Length: 572
Image 1 (cartoon, rainbow, N blue to C red):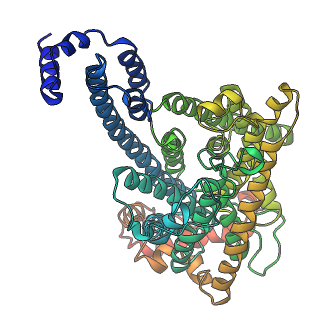
Image 2: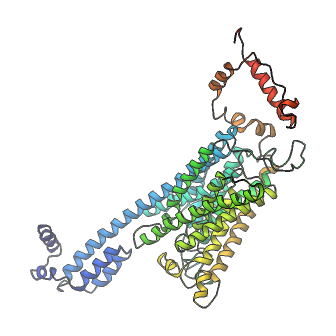
């Protein structure tokens, strides 16, 4: 009561109110009731609505004190929402950037141990180069000069963030940079173990500074020709890619595919030393399954910043959409992981008669489900997320097999995960986007998912058509620019490392030594070798002459060299 009396006194002093307004303050009528509802729902234009309500209230009106009080409360609520939204986007952007750790761990575990340093450094410098190029020009190309009343091909203002002076603007840049870094780092795993560091840095700058921002502008900027928030969206709805199945993952996947094709496979993957095609492709086992699964889990966690964070704010009724994104993201990832494992297990059992459960299929299946639901996480129902996850797993399996048949070497299967599932994610929106979720996510519900269109009795597929056009646009733009770029690097011998360096390992050739130091354990093991035994004859019939003699000779030589390296003493 005392605080209320003090509040009334302060307002009466500020506005020089007469005694009759004290009595009026206890009867707020409809104005204060309306504002309490607006503030509770945290509508972003609550302050504007309040001004409209109170614009005609004069000082002699009994409701004047109600308007004055409500205006102040609404102003504080609006400022509080701004701080809350900035913190929300800071937290979400941090999770997205933390995905760089996931990519680094996944790539490091997937390559051979002789290339671990190289792939880790590429992931680090990739984020650094991407940050500088996106700050200098990329952000301006993506979002500069937004105006929903017109359509532009590329942004043209706010280079070097020179025009930015608000917390909202700075945190939005940070969030968008984290997305740009994700698109750029997708390629790292695909070209691992054979790509030059200089070429990788050049590609990272070009993709983050120009190729990716143009795609962002076309779909996410209000001035984009495919943007759903433009005043005249394409076919009445525009393209719906809520968190970036197409903008981020299809762009990165297309770049990875083009790079892998031009760069060529790792030595010994599809051809022998004479250049002859191997009967069966040679697999290079990952050196650490533990790092792979760690990276997968980190990426999954990071996706909760990627998808729910794409609401860009938590106020103004966006809590529902953010919560839905978290649910659909979880369901799609879990479903895809299980589907990928079970599908490959069933096929393997059919071919070999044995049940084998592939860890890599589970990990890449989960990532495929995450990519597949990213475009529609805010507009599909939970049951649709399960369907998206199932199809994402099958798309990944098919694309992975297709790459092997085409002899395109992808060290971490990034192309099937990001290109294949990113493509499917855009199509899935055109099939499963529900009217109520479109409206709650601030999209136009004039055209909805194709299956829902049939329930309306129309069967029109305008939204699906938009999504297909977006796929064609992203693949065409990215391929048309990155293809010649990689060809130029290859022509000037700037793309691929020397064959000898590739065989020795990029860590030793370029990074001052191997990532792991085994010198102590190797010396200990060598000291424990029994110097008195004879080198076994692995070529004898008694020791398995049916096995390849080359492998036995290699093993024999290793044993001989190990014995020669050990200084044996009498009685050892």
